[in-house]
Image 1: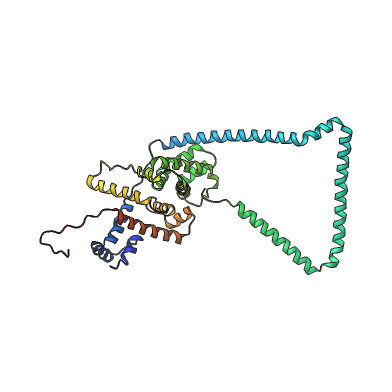
Image 2: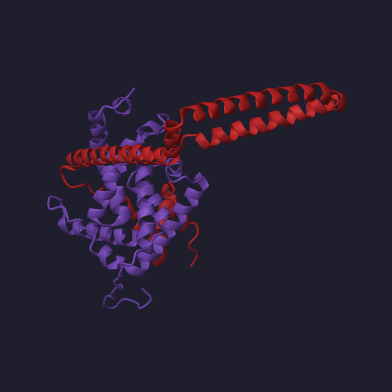
Amino acid sequence: MNHRPFEDWLIDDQPLTSEQKRELQSHLRLCTSCSAIAESNLALHTAHMVSPLPGFTDRFKTRLAHRRSDQRWRQIVGTLVLVLGGLGLLYWLAGPIIQEALNSPAEWITTAISYFLFVLTSLQALGEAGAILLRVVPNFVTLTGLFIILTMVSGIGFLFIISIWRINRVPQGV
Amino acid sequence: MNEEMAWVIQAQQGNDEAFTNLVEAYQKHVYNLCYRMLGEPESAEDAAQETFLRAFQHLHRYDRKRPFATWLLSIAAHYCIDRLRRRKFSTASIDQDEDEGGFELPDADAPNPETEVVHTEQREQMQYLLKRLDSVDRAAIIMRYWNDCSEVEIAEALNLTVSAVKSRLHRARRALAGLWQAETPRPKPERRPNESPAF
């Protein structure tokens, strides 16, 4: 038996003309397969909404209060663990240095000054190297080359910004 | 601005009472979706409560251009789909549990109790058949027929394209009809005296 187009009419809930309705009725009298579709159609269209038990909103409020209290506790415990862990780590890492500094302050001050001088001289050296490069590079790289390099750098920067934007985009639905 | 949007804005600004109004307004829709998805009143209650909690926690993410109901149903549908996927991997016997679901009673005030009983049987049968569908197809069917969502809204809620929703709905309807035919006992038409065997 040919079920077309009756199956599609029923499955897709297509609006029918009175002529089509008559054709469908006469087909349904003969065809069990399409009758099943029509019956399941009827069951779907007469389906009613199931309601929750009374007091749903009150139960929600209670649950929300519990969830908030849990979150507060978790935050307190988390902060405590983080602070205590941080302090422990700091003590473990800086303990010997502090101990040493307290035992011989002169040596500690000398070390700090020499470290500071080292950083300062390194920065100066880097600055001088940069200045030399800026003087020398234009002799080797043409204006076109410089343009290409600058374009590539800005392209990479643009890609980076787009990637960060896409990652941070707020999704809908949770 | 309608009342619902006013509640949403107030809730986004931290007004709990406004969110409670939203819970009051949408509890039936969300609970029904969860019940039809999961098939058990207890699980449905839990899922519906969790849906509202998640909505409350992520209310700042809600895009006011979209209908609030669709956003809420999207959270509920995704939660139920995840739960059904987790169930698949659990060792407990699900079938036995699921068969205990369905608690709808015929409406005593209905004008014709017999018709009402037939309709109730059909609804229970439909609930039983829904469980046999794929979880995403099931969500699409429930949103379409129980929540009157358009195909566009279903697509937004389930993160699908509109054509994928159309094809899923068509496939699910066909599957439901097939299952309906296979599962529903059909009385054979009795031949009346002096009637031709051809009829």
